[in-house]
Image (tube, rainbow over all chains, first blue to last red; front, side, top):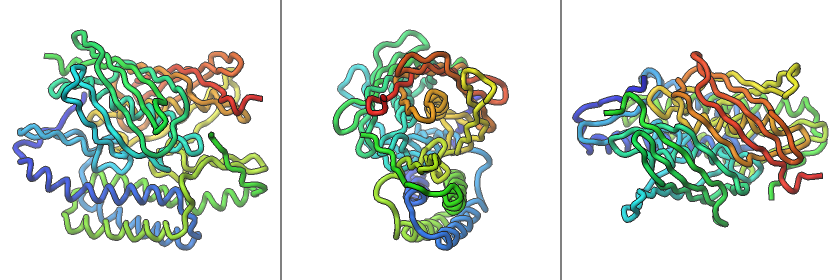
Length: 211
Length: 211
């Protein structure tokens, strides 16, 4: 069972305050992830840094939630997917993507511009094919899910036209049609030279979310 | 152009020594990523921890490689994909997976048992569908690539049977047939109650790697 967490009547200002506490921490850890992959420091320095990190982790863990972050929502309609590995502002694994909606597009087109560095590398200098899949699954899922209608991936097919260079990237998706509980979406990933990966997917409203 | 890095005649013992320096650092940062998502500490503590992390990052960055880690290989045949976001022992984003080969299986079956926690969550308590895609892309790619024949994803299709619970997971893949530059692979992801996502893909030898 997938359970979203109702955190009640939390004002948007309080949501903003919480974001301002935790988002910068995730931003800093994201930089540390990059440095961990790329550092050439000697063994003694690395061991000393590691001890500092373990101490920082212990301090953060002295008060923490059980299990994962979940997806929290407020009475006012704020939705907090802060632990999400694609868009989560509290998750250092997430680039994180900010997904924008094209309000003039009838197909509900969404798009996002972002940067991927060393942490996302598969073939040397290029984006891991599975990372392209991770991002496209999310972006297609965003366009397929209406605010009040969660839809999860049913099937998704990715076609790789060529390898995607690390650096500045763009992804977008649109709905091609809906059919009852199903939404059909297409999208692509692009680097500065154009489209690199195309995706199409069927997204399905889970049984528990059907009116 | 995808360029692998020849690091020359580095003995396996030296490769092991380097791994022993950097792998524990990545393990510690992976724990910090989890704590960053789950902590409930107050704003002042979080700010103090953040300053410590920034200092640690600066120390690691005082000597670091330009750009991403790449994929390095030695004259002796060691291959170091240590920055890889699925299997990279220096990448805190990677779970990391250890992929094993079933030596008795004619289809070259590979498999891996691993754990996914808070950093990989999509639907509350469950694995992000795109993370399932990331892992299956990698595992199918591993079975499709022979040691001397890099093969990159051509197309991959994922079918989601149900949501995958966070926790202990298993993935596996096998080749169904090869046809010149192409290899066809199938695989699946499973949680403790069975298969959750099925995958099939075509993996293609890049032009520069064809004899």
